[in-house]
Amino acid sequence: MVQIIEQPGTLSSRIGRGIGQGLKEQLPKEVERYRLSKGIENLAGESNLTPIQQLAKLYSLPGGSEAAPAVLPFLERQQRRTAMKTRREGELSAPGARPGVVPEAGRGAVQQPQGQEAPEAVKRKPLMESGFAPSSEITRYKENLLQPATMLQIEELANEYLDLGYTQDPTEARSLARNELDTNRAAQQEKNQTLRKDLSQRLQLNLQGGGIGDFKDVAGEIQSKLIDQGEYLVNELGLSPEAASEKINDIATALGKTATQAKAVGSISNIFTSPKSKINSIKDQRKKFAKYGFGEQFDDMATHYLGITPQRYASEFDPLKNKGIESVLKKHSTSFGHKGIQIKKIKPKEMDQLILDIKPSDNILSIEQGLRERNIDINQFKERLRDAVDERKVALTDLQQRQLEKPVSNFMFGDILWDARR
Image (cartoon, rainbow, N blue to C red):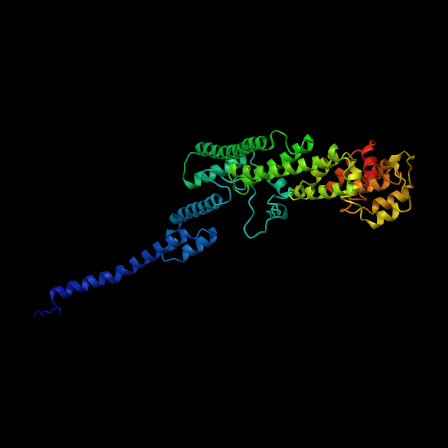
C-alpha cells in the first residue's frame, strides 16, 4: 500500500520559501561586499596613514585580506596624488605665487620634516618699522634665489609626474620637470629685471639723474640696497614689480631730498653758520636715513658735505660714552694734535687696557678722535686693535670693523675751521 504524503502549502508558498532560503545565503555576502567597498573608499581618502596603518585597516575589513594584493597598489598611488595636490595648493596660495610657477621657497628648497621646528637661521624675521626687511633677511633671501636645476631636483620632480600619471615615459617626465624648473627660474629673473628697469626710470625722472645726493659712491650703495629691498617685496611678499618699484621710488625720492638738504647745510654759503646749528640739522636728516637702515651711508655723505674728518664727525654725532676708555684718555691732557704738536705713543700696557674696554656700542672713530685730541698716535691704536682682534681678545661688530678700516686723514683744515667757529 502506497502512502502519499502531501507537502503542506500551496505552490506559491513553496516558491516563496525557496527564494527566502536563497536570500538568507546571499544577503550576508552582499553586506560584506558593501562594507569592503566603503572601507576601501574611506582608506583612499586618508592620505596621512603610513603603509603599515593602511594594511592593518584593510585587513580589518570583511574580505580585506583577500582583496589586499589587488587594492594596496591603488591605495598607495591615490595617497601620493592627494599629498601632491595638497602640497601644490599650498605652494600656489603662498605670497607671490602664481599658476604654473612654483614659489622660490618651494621647488628646490629644503623641506622641513613635519613636527620639527624650523632652524633659527631660516625663520622669517619681521619687517622693520620702516617696512624694510632686516639685512639678515635680505641675506637669507639672496641665498635662496632659484639656481639652475640640479639633476637631483629634476629626478625628484620627474618621479612626481610619473606618480601623478601625467606620463608613463621616464624620459618625457624628466623633460617636463626640467622645463618647469627652468620656467620658474626664468620667471623670477624676469620679475627682478622688470623691477630694476621700472625703478631706474622712476629714479632718473624724480632725481633728474643726480642720484641720492652727489656723493656717487655712497649713492650707488644706497640704490643697490634699495633694489635688494624691492626684489624682496616682489619675490618674498608678493608685490608686483610695478608696485614694489613705486614704493621704493617714493623712499628714494625722500632720501634724495634729505641728502640735498644735508649738502646745503655743509655748503660754502653756510660757512658762518655755527657748528651747533649744523649738528641739529644733520641729526634730523640722519634720522630719516637711519629709519631705512642707511645711517652709516648718511654719515659718509654728511662727513663729505661738512668737510671734516670721519673722526671729528663721529665725536659730534656718536660721542664716546665708555667710562673705562675715558679713564685711560683722561690721564693725558688735550692738546689738539691737528695744530701741529708732535704725535706721541703710549705704553703698550696702557693701550691694551683701552682696547680691552671696547664694547659693541662704541664708535671706533670716536675713540680715534679722543686719541687725536691728546696727540696720541692713532696708527698705534689701529695696529694694536687689529692684533687683538686676530688674537681673539676683542670681538668687533661688522660696523666697528668698517670703522677701523677707514683711513686716518691728515688733512684737518676742515676740523680746524669747525673748532674755530664753536
